[in-house]
Image (cartoon, rainbow, N blue to C red; front, side):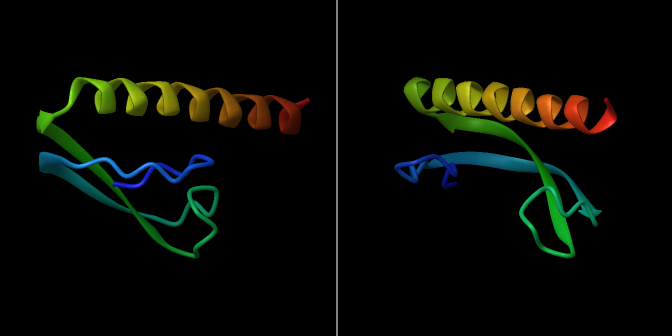
Length: 72
C-alpha cells in the first residue's frame, strides 16, 4: 500500500480482504468508479500500523471539514 502523503510512503503487510464494495464516490480518488476494500491485517510492522492510523484520522478530519463547509 502506498499512503498518499508527501513522501509517498510504501507500507508492506499481509492482510485478508474481508469486503469489496463498488463505489461511485468521486471524492475517493477522482475516478468515475472505484472499489472500497476492507482488509483484516494479519502481519504488519507496528510503526507502519501507527502511520496508517495517523493518516486515517487526518483524512477523516479533512473530509469532515469539507462536508461541514459545504453544508453551511
